[in-house]
Length: 108
Image 1 (cartoon, helix red, strand yellow):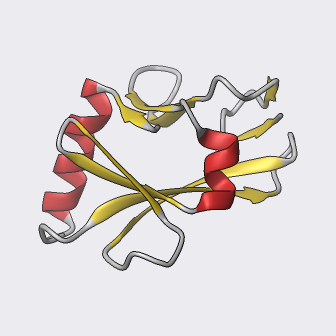
Image 2: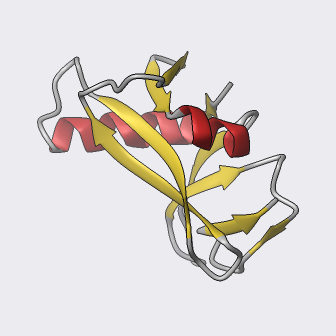
Image 3: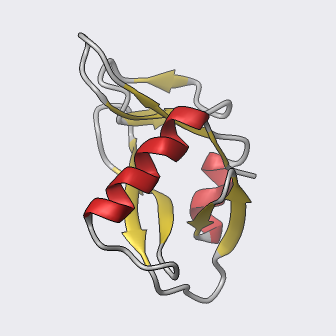
């Protein structure tokens, strides 16, 4: 399961409205090789489901994850942080054994 914090939910709705995304749009979360820790998070808007996608919904946000990425992301909370240290989406991933200082890559 992938969950969405209240802050992320608010910001996702704002981004979708600003980008004129329709009701068929959703958040696609994934993992690819790269980054300073070995694996990088991917976060995009999409409206095309693919074979093998796993679908979750939390706080009215539809989150879609491919099966391979789900192995690394199961139990992750998508959050949004703003402030002096920068702002953006943050992944609270219980499977990560190491993360880089920027929070965009991790290792398991």
